[in-house]
Image 1 (spheres, protein in one colour):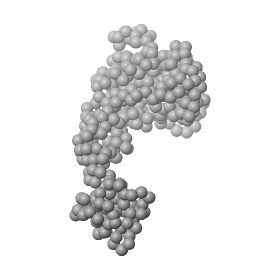
Image 2: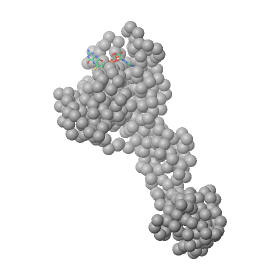
Image 3: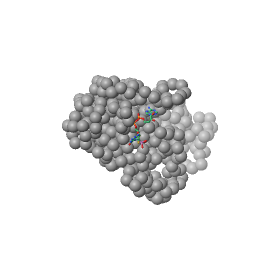
Image 4: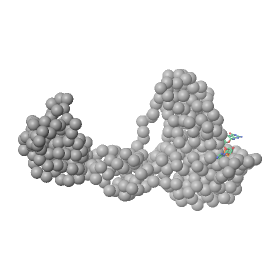
Length: 401
Ligand SMILES: Nc1nc2c(c(=O)[nH]1)N[C@H]1C(S)=C(S)[C@@H](COP(=O)(O)OP(=O)(O)OC[C@H]3O[C@@H](n4cnc5c(N)ncnc54)[C@H](O)[C@@H]3O)O[C@H]1N2
Ligand code: MOO
């Protein structure tokens, strides 16, 4: 079927290649109906996105706390020492001026205490404690006062924040057992190609599938739940049915985007009742990438088969779509100067694997569309606009896998 006939089946005019910034924006907008919120246990929340601001359920610290091992003291010294306070116990009775109590880091300060004298700054003569520190003890020294970090009810993080390990720690510290997060977008990965091996050495005509291992952990980190990874043979009916019957929010396919004798993706999309939102992008590598809306409020991202081209398709279409579906906040662009002149394509955007150095972003060798050697050493993909950039100019950097 020709491209024109395909679009006749789809009932829409041909889309034609999109400029790279527009393609990325189209993908983001396609996901702007974030999935519904749901409460999950803290232990399940990693990788989700906050559906509501994270509010402190308590002051932090929740009580005046000793920041050092030593003595809680009241008023000016010397002090009479009476007793000991360990972390995990309530503070007990108040200290009068001139009194001290031995205290551990993290223990609740007794009422009346005005400072903590560090163990290494105190000297005991009998029951009398003297300050031998380098400077006189000041009021509040080495005390973490109640609510120093936040007050109960204060919003600590906005809705749309990805839940990483630090967010889990903060949520626990301020009293949460469960978090309100968005349901993760469910992704099914279809890896197309009869030439792909899942194990062993490449042999004549056969290559290892590099994208089955590369994409799922990356998409998971972008907030997706991977429902499955399926190898699909170069068979039109199999591909059409795989697309038609997938229940995933987002089907991500690799290969089959171009015009080869077994590149069936466009035809399969047409028969599955899809509407193309992006059909080719003015970007190198990766120009045959596509994005389609499937019946039932689902999407398909078609990544080209060449591995670095598939990575370009992921940053351009898959990640913006998944981030929007997961309700993630849009990050400010990450900018760095180009360390050297970076020649551009006359009309298309280039996406280049780069390393961040003190001189700026340095391009890496082995950046051909079929290669992953440069990418595996990269910190980021640099966006080189048509025409290129001169050394020192600001470059946008995108997350590399
Ligand atoms: N006549 C034209 N031919 C091609 C064009 C074009 O414009 N006109 N575009 C080229 C570009 S650019 C790309 S990128 C590829 C895209 O091809 P497909 O998406 O149809 O992918 P395949 O043909 O299935 O495979 C291309 C290449 O990638 C290898 N491959 C595929 N999947 C994997 C995988 N999972 N792991 C590792 N390698 C994979 C495959 O063996 C092929 O070598 O089309 C060009 N052709
Ligand atoms: O998308 Mo292709 O990578 O330019 O080979």
